[in-house]
Amino acid sequence: MTDTDKMTDTSTEDHPHSIPVFTTEEEAQEFWATHDSTDYWDQMENVTATPPRQLGIGPGRAGSRARKRPSEGRMDLISLRFPSAMIEAVKEIAAQRHLPYQTLMRSWIGERLAQEGDHVKPEVE
Image 1 (tube, rainbow, N blue to C red):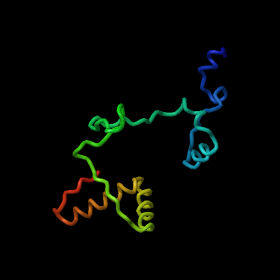
Image 2: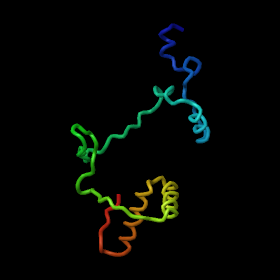
Image 3: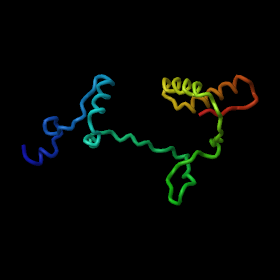
Image 4: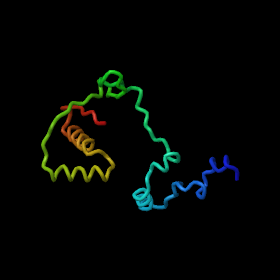
């Protein structure tokens, strides 16, 4: 094998930092808990999300590329106080559903408003 072949060969014996194929999530967790991911950058998939086109450039500093919601999708920020145990319970349920807990709470409030009648037309994400 020439030096050029060795540089382009990605087999396990010539490339000691090959990501193994995992059969369980536990195997993956154990592997990444004991290995530095920077040794594997060249093998990782790019999962960078592209923001939707309808999002405008945000009002941040000059030259900011931050995105903001369109005006018709804007939400108001409020502050509510809940018992800690209630928040923890919501967080547990949200984690089981793979949702941010605020999104789950907003959904529940929207559902309840819909049950109460035509008072308000909730816009749920």
